[in-house]
Length: 577
Image 1 (tube, rainbow, N blue to C red):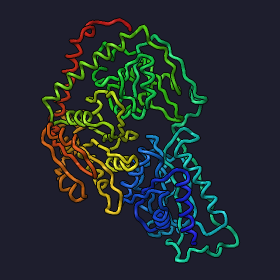
Image 2 (image 1 turned 120 degrees about the vertical axis):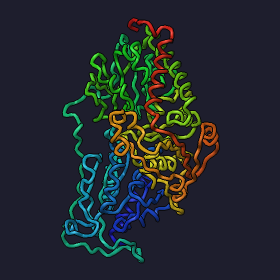
Image 3 (image 1 turned 45 degrees about the vertical axis):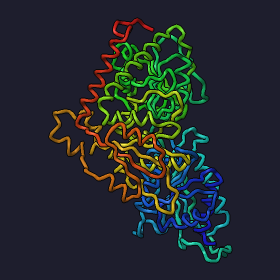
Image 4 (image 1 turned 120 degrees about the horizontal axis):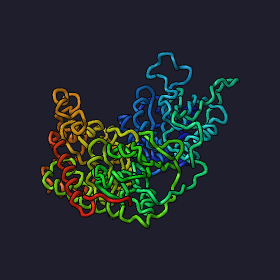
């Protein structure tokens, strides 16, 4: 067996043994040994093939988010560079991802050989582990070296020892021949008398955010006690997990949880919290915030975490990173042990009553604004139960955060909030569906769909996901309408450089990629489509008008303000809880 084939088979077998059983492959020549090995791996590895490397990488990211760690395999050159967005998302979101890039042998580097570039540390400091693996030539013990290397890489990806999961990168060189031998008997050792091949270069990536000194409580992890005499809320950002909800309920704290936090449920969760933070008797009286996960959605939350009169306690059980964009964290701890706020039930009651009346006010406004992003998000939320929901960045996740009433049941909401990009969302959702084996629904904007339209393409030889994508199509970048760029003073330049209208025909696009397309025109039709069984790849398009977004959000804010002011006990000054 030639060395390249032997190396590839050893790599694939060890990945499977270590639990990496889902692999996404993009076609290429230098990576051919891995392609043959994956095709021959049988049931030990589930292979997915995608034409576009960026699609392949985000599909692998979705597979990891939906189950066990997954891998992505590409050839050399720009193919490897196309993985970078997914590697960055995995790094910042803490998602295990094994990246295998094929490369030319060391002697061919720097010679101008076709599709050859410097792939060493191509992804900078993002990987948790990196190895530059030289081309095998049949030296005794090569396979054992690879197995040891992969064990370190997979352990780094899962955070088994560090508690800090993320992407790892193995850059593997292959020397011709790149196809399996017709005679698979072991080759005669043709290695030179003296071993001159470079050893694998391995190193964990340097982390500029890693503290030079020990942070309180990271080692050993022990809960930090909190006194019971501060008006406290729990802020649960992306991937906060159920611990945020448990602490809120035990301590009697209001829970301000983003949809993808994994904590937005139960009686302490307050849905329209970001509008309530503006109320002086609610947000204005907060004295302490417990921060879980990665909060990124709301400017009112950012303003809260930057206030000098608020104690900010970041609960981060995974070194070395923690969220503190305002640079105001008073303490960073691995866990908290709150004292139950038995004497201040009024504080929680106040938030719960305000949340209920605010939710009713929002629902009333949206009843007259059914063809809007928030109204669509509310319908998708109401119709989704027992199936994962993947939400795109920009307006969709913020709309959901505003309108989604905390459910009484568990609802898996996933979003790529590591870097909050719109790229790769369709592919990520596809990977989640393939990993879970369940139908998945996605809520995205039109630019998000167009940016990752290649994610709709699944070849006829591949297992396709059951994925329904609800697209709010406002013909451009609606989120900028709500930012300072959308103010009337910027109208002359706004439409071209921020609004970016595209005029794309989504029905024709879907037809080209073999995905079913349905365009709905009213709330009743959308409700019926969402209630009907769905299989395969389908796109549900809802047209909206972004020119009315600023007015809609002002109406929502005004309605909530008026409703909360009319609530008994909230319109008058309240004492300290």
